[in-house]
Length: 151
Image (cartoon, rainbow, N blue to C red):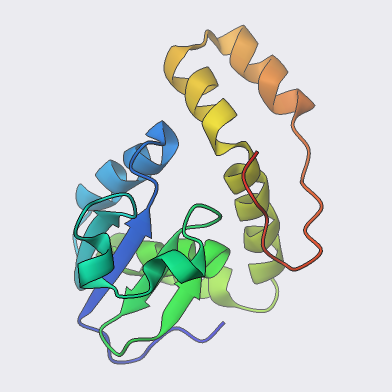
């Protein structure tokens, strides 16, 4: 993955009903900023106005990021770009974007995306033992087209 060299802003389209997604949004917003970032729930009434055609990209499957240069990133690459927006995490984002770690980030994002609603319930309502048991039982989904639907 090649991170954009000249970037001033990104728009992040995420699931506004997912507690894990919302927690990620809140965490990113607390970080010192390297460039501007706008979070827009894909369910928001103005999401289609802000990004015409967003629905055709199936944002329920994975987070979508659009740069100020209209480049689109999905899934793991979108997560890496969000991390890159944080001044204190740009080095980590560069490493994750590289050929050695990007496959790991992709795998982790697929597992998280496919299980995000269950994870949200567990992490935000469950006790530690239940969290451990749920995480132990989760497996990576089969993704024949490289994009995984949420179940």
